[in-house]
Length: 79
Image 1: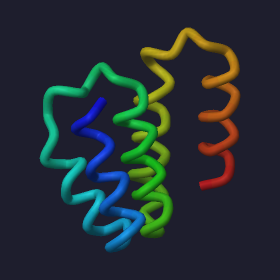
Image 2: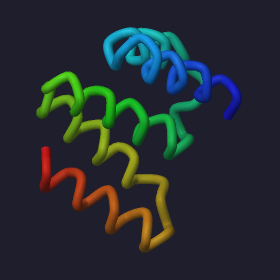
Image 3: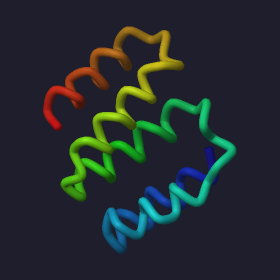
Image 4: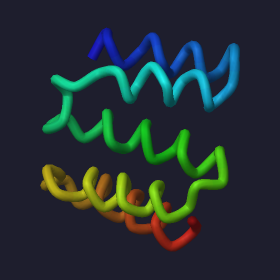
């Protein structure tokens, strides 16, 4: 979780491209839903719709929470 906070903060300060670079360098959070959701949001903000959609779909896989699933599905429709 702490590892994901830094890229999120950097993305706010320096922009989504730099945040995405940092997130892409993390490889041990693959099963962690917020990792894929944060990555998808940065991709969306960069206008990389197909990649954002794929990342949002990946975030859906581990989620058993219906509220999270509805949020992610809305994001996919909005990409």
